[in-house]
Length: 86
Image (cartoon, rainbow, N blue to C red; front, side, top):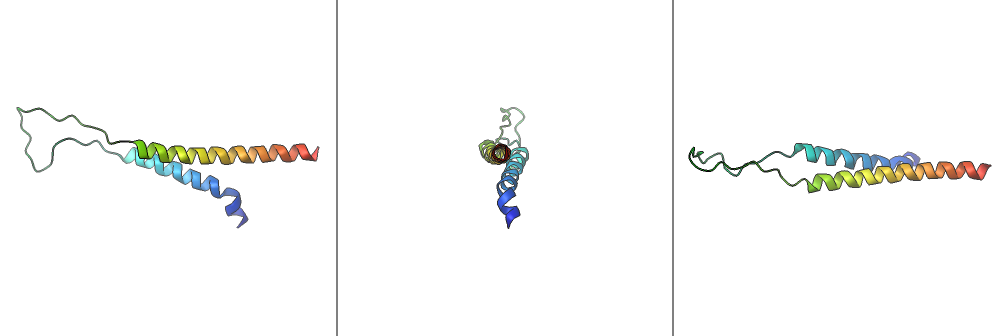
């Protein structure tokens, strides 16, 4: 149980970071047409549009903040312990 208490936030943050990156990379370009409708050669061609990456960016940033906070906390505790021994 000590391992979960020590590394739980870091592992959770890393998982959120990976999920956010996967969500960002898995978004596909969509077009305005459908598969069933025929493409009219004389009409306007729909421009491909990208889906909104907000969710992937948000999840990745939350994971990154958790990992960075955990690392900073660990470094701070290590420095504090070294000063108290002196």
